[in-house]
Image: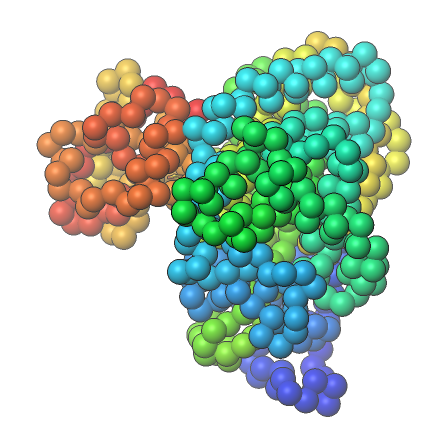
Length: 411
Length: 107
Ligand code: FES
């Protein structure tokens, strides 16, 4: 991957910016998914702002600029889409999200509703059950000895707690992961991954749309809580299903990849597993550090609402800016020994959950799931060994594995 | 530079220098003050930067926002009349000498 210049005949309406390093990197390619770190380094070292030839967008990969863009939502807006597609020019593939793809003041109200449904108090309510389920899962896996840490643990555990916590019916749950994978692929460019995901999506979309309706959500679950907020007048009856959809889109695949990342880290760094075992209260931080280290959500776009200067570069109105969250989380300008997985690291400030007003609304739920799973492992598991070929899963936004065969032994 | 003192649950006082415009949480994490976790990085979304403001200083702080108020209800340690989120306390010259007490837990 090298910096190249090119005449701009292919994209006549966009003049490639002068003074910004041009790179021919494709962050949505198999080559990139296989080893993003080397290319992240190229991106960070090229400059604070780069131009990505392939898709005609700006990119930021250093911590300072990623953080700055995330925290200026009025200049770098979300309402024109947080994928490559610009909603001012293209129709979204599904009705626009009223929280993720919204700006203040519209965003403020819907965000408040979801923050409330997923508040620390709400987490206290599910904590005991989530903890028991994690312990039971680890006992079951210890009895088996060897298994696939992706399917049997990273997917199985969230699937054993999240759909019930939402209040979903039993039938059709197999649509949840494909739906989420579709949503995250769709943030990418019109490549094969995105195209295929959308082509296959009709049944998953139909399932999710139906589960968002009030009559399909069990009382007491997060879904019913959202509908109750419509009764209270905080949102309209039409908005409630769209907010349920936001949780169904973002609440499962992310925790799957987060827990998968943590397992992959503990399997590769036995000294860190030993450290965690010696002090299981590190479980929450060990999960957080895995989020920093692997950044399960790799990228998001913003669109400029006006001409803006960023790190000395002038960016015009209506430009897409791609934020490399994973690169920011390993920027040596911000992190000491960034390529080291350290369960005792002070992780505060990482952008694995984003930052600013759009920061992951389900972060407390994700941390709860990650913490109780790693705590169960810390108490019950003596060793984790990779026992077969590790396979990567390709997605335009999510970084994770397809398969992680491991063998574990009891403490 | 405003200095702030964090008082740990065991009574130990830790005095640190805060940068202007920095939050009390940012100053604490920069100086490795144990007891401030700040999982959300200062976005008023996690309640793990909870502090009890020394009574002498309480009235001098800016009023709390709705987000902060709601989050404090879910904080791990008991909420008191002087509870605040340290990430929402911006340091300025007039807060020089601020005293913040740490709760016994953040999770
Ligand atoms: S750091 Fe999360 S609420 Fe203050």
